[in-house]
Length: 388
Ligand code: DHB
Image 1 (cartoon, rainbow, N blue to C red):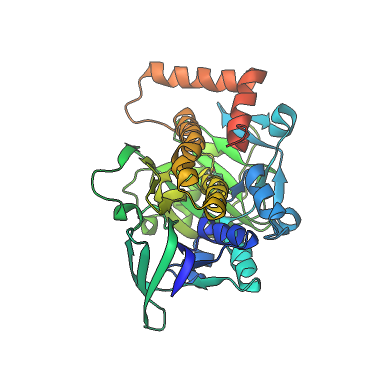
Image 2: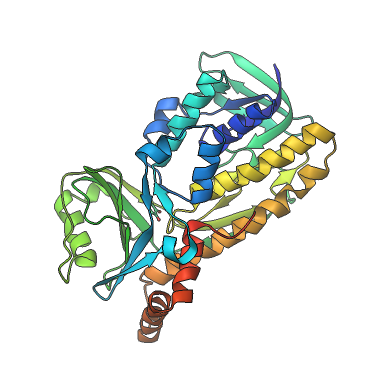
């Protein structure tokens, strides 16, 4: 078989690209080693930047994000036992939407299906070669398939196969590890607060997020070696209470499910394109989860990628492909900075000196007391950095 664009990875980045290309009259085939069910039920982040929402709505994927998502006009930074609200709408005229990544996936998968898109879940043995661009794999029903394409897009996540198809020595990698992780869980309980709470405490960071009126998503900073099975409900709530409750604020508690330990890493690889292979999303970069930039950054890559691929097929030259890396990296490094900064702003670092701790409180005070400080945070959180 032959297609114009072979897309490896049917997460939000791969599917949105396939959808946008379809609207430009460019055909693609999307494959994923995971089943539709696996992707739809793996809990991921829940916050969409306004630019991500506009892309989904304006390109006709679905307006379910507007009807069923929740607009959040600000967040709370909690420290020293008090809530400090950052008002995005007032400071930068933008809002974010609470709308889980699993719903973004379902909307995109449904839209591709309705439009007759070729998306193959549950494939095996994927292999990618660049010159000429060919993807081989075993279909879910066991048939071996050879898919030749004009372009290959690797949207296959942080353990990307496609990234490793670049010739040796061609890529530069930037990498940072953190000495902690997040323990994430779902709680069957009412909302504790109308907006998200990012809490710094002497016992470590905690995040109070949401899913529905009866289901909440929360995280707390933990050691990377923690195992979910060692934490029963009471132990988890005791940890959350220590970090968040106080001064009249009390978390709404309930039965816990969906326990996971999330790794913390910052990673960038460049170039994001070699020949006719282009990377998007986590295949090219990973951010730590503080600030929920990962999905948004992947969708921002896709916005640029759609444009360069459109130009490529319109003009037939490599010129637009050549500009992809620089255009995408501009936003990537801004988001890397924001995710790193929001992380170091709020987490406890083992071995921090008394000076380090007081300095961190000073930084939080500046952010919440200075209008310009708050606006800087709001710009970063909403991703309002101007055109990418
Ligand atoms: C969620 C995750 C994040 O990393 C974040 O910064 C905010 C919200 C979430 O899963 O809801």
